[in-house]
Image (cartoon, rainbow, N blue to C red):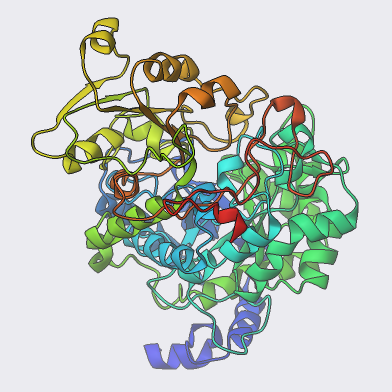
Length: 614
């Protein structure tokens, strides 16, 4: 049979046939084993070519906590992924893989990729167009490595900064989060006018399958505990936490990831009402719903016990694809057994497989399953780094400028005689980028290519300016030098997820003491690098001459010097209420007892304006 004849007889192989016809044709040809294989997402480090081929595995993932190909270039990743893709294409029906990764602020697993500010910083910009452009840049750098599926964006509404994923949220304000879902149209492309709400959309080979996460209420858990319990009425859940998903569905988001967390005591991965009746039914979502990493294991205690029951619960609740990621043979065996016993209906399996195939057809994976090496030059390219630099400068929030009214401390003078740069975060690219950078929990030091705060200041200061850098300035340095001013970079060490849960929220690494010691002797600008508001005691704020919240800005430190020297205006506004003490938490705009240190939307400018009043 010729290729043309084969395409004519196999509707699903015909790129010109309607997608729903292709889905129907392919599903009719699939065995139960092949259907269950499509519902399975497995980790690269345990995958074999034979299993991908023989089990018709639907998806693969490189988890954030693992280090496959750690020192490899993007071209090496593409080569590896293409090998597994070839195995999938060589399977009986030739269904391609959708390879996934957490590229949550750039293609952050890859050395040399552009690392953008984390979402909380983007929320501070309030710039929907900027978010869309960043999404498009990230899509290119992800596709360059052979990856098709990005587990982003997180559209959680973070109501408590004690949550370890606070920086993955754009804001405590639902409207800001809704606005920033424009990043989806960058990742996937802009759906045409009249596109059906809830139907997945991917524009082409330069775009990726996006994933709105984590459905739903993950930012509203009691005391900000990661994977905790959100206690609320349905109306509150809908108006605060679910609303951004409506925008995601209008933008054609292809996948949604369920949350580890619970709503009123019921885990989301087991919640038929929210996953099936609401998301798929009421909201009309036609893409596929994926579990989080090893989430099924969390449906029993001890974790991973009674696994068959966990599979039964999650699939019947509405999960379509399971991020297993390791025990995939047991998952496949248990799911097939559950179908054969009638505990899970074939209609539920077919619904899941249809959704998965719909996304793969929409994304063009059947026509273009392999990597496009022509995109490799986009990784860390100048254009993307300039975009990241723009994002940094727009994200900076000026919280204090001068000790006396009418006498601002900023902008700084580039030709100052002598400058001290100090602090744990002044020359640490890993700290500047935060978690989900190269490693799941992030790391310290020169973990990738980029510009630290110190690098940036050295680049722009005048030729005659003496720049002295000491992480912890000695008493001799502080007493024996006539400094024009000091730059002190302090903040949080990198973290991710539960490791970041924090009930105290003090500036780590003796940051407050360091600020105090320097500010007692030298006029001081404090640049705070953090994934959330931190405790700033009144006595400490009084000592500072200026304070900038820089969030987790990523690799492009020049965005900071662009603004503090006055080449650009401060534009950032607080995306979260800045509390006075942790005893006040949770504290959000509109609370009757809300008396914050700085309110939601606060931000000073050189024009002596408070942006909140605009």
